[in-house]
Image (cartoon, rainbow, N blue to C red):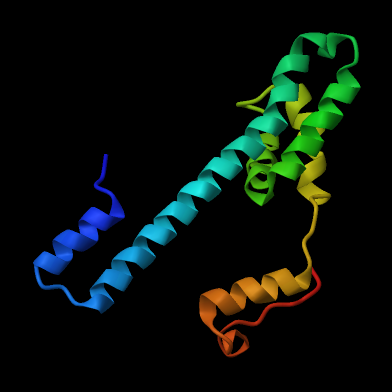
Length: 141
């Protein structure tokens, strides 16, 4: 395991590093802890969405329609990456069962949308406040 932050800071002080370097180390450690917390949170959330699917799979022969509706709901709830993966998979009848492709084809033209403001924020974060000078995007699809 990596040494604790206090040990790293003490070692850097002995080596003559200044306080700005110490602050950078602490910021780096804080960002790493935040990323780890997000990974754990996402894993728990996705596990909570998938667990009912796995547990109910043997029962789907009795109420298959409800099981597929939960699959679609769980995919949407899992977020845009899961939706995009399901869109791709539903177009690959050569790789996935026809029942899956038929049910998830619904996401091809009726995927959940997000607000235009979310798109603007993402573009501003990536390209800066003058993103409209670089890119022309219609607000309506």
